[in-house]
Image 1 (tube, rainbow, N blue to C red):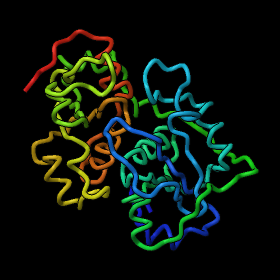
Image 2 (image 1 turned 60 degrees about the vertical axis):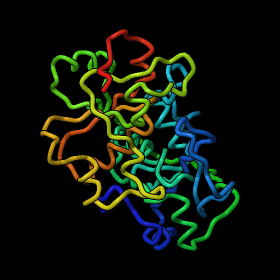
Image 3 (image 1 turned 90 degrees about the vertical axis):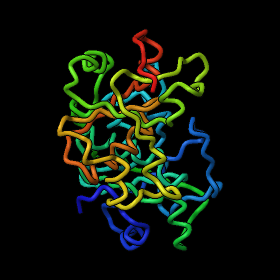
Length: 277
């Protein structure tokens, strides 16, 4: 099964598979102002993937910095993840942080990884079992991380691409943040966007925390207007960019990557003018 998305029914049917690992990528708060509705509930047998802690570079200058191979590999081993594991990632908002974790595994060379479409809300609404505590693991897995460098783009690449235009840059933030008509949620960070980027807000791809149909995704992504250039996705700090990247993976054939520093890095370190609409 190669589809990035799985349903609650599929996950429930395969929950006892020996190779299955279910990861909860929920975070305590978010810059989008979204709030979970189900408190401390978790999918039975799931483990906590500490996206903002043990799976972010502790020496990174900006939020959610991509970890080293060693850090990622050791974190996965401590969760009992093996090279053969089939991983399903979910979060408590439906679709928010789970695509980021899906992308991280892909960037580290692991192909058998999927996102639970609709996340915890879908699981609960479909009547499947929840628990109050994560699964405890008392063994180490044999996971191996092999970074695929083409999955990540640096600020130097993004700056050079403003004039070279070899890649299309898509910004997943809200229209107001992209256009600089509302303040950034991070104190002291200037407003605006990277020159020559286009805006596809991540929320426009979702309906009640679930990805829209592929036909609807094609309309939102304006597939007919996107050429065959590789696409680089950005947002505020690299999380919601992955929501749009995953949608693109479903309906486009373009090569894709993430500008991990996103607007937090670019807006902090550069003075290039932004193209306000």
